[in-house]
Image (cartoon, rainbow, N blue to C red):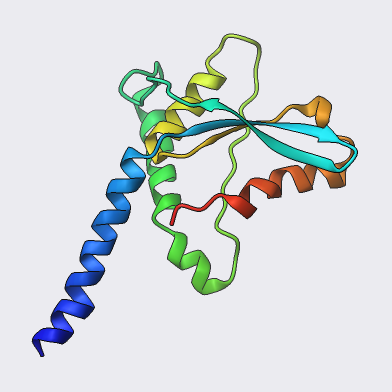
Length: 145
């Protein structure tokens, strides 16, 4: 009985806490896509260390809350997506003129979820099929596990 508690529940709990601690201390990275004769690929550019957070970003509080709630809901839904057999992914499209805070929002979201950042360079995208390939590629080597 005690062995079952230790091996089953306690060990699982310790592993979950350990993974969470590693994820919190993990250095995020910035990637950018490139094109070569072998296809499109992602290049590691540098460590991503940006101070942006939802506490410091200028935005209506109700919109900010909506985005935070959506991000957290997505982040916590991984098991659900796995159970129903759908890819666990979410995308935001930010658009507008230079200087309105698109990158600040990206940095804020990446910091909130402890995710790496992928900067899509459209000049390296050669076709619609290639665009889909470029978007799918990070999912092949990035995991929150």
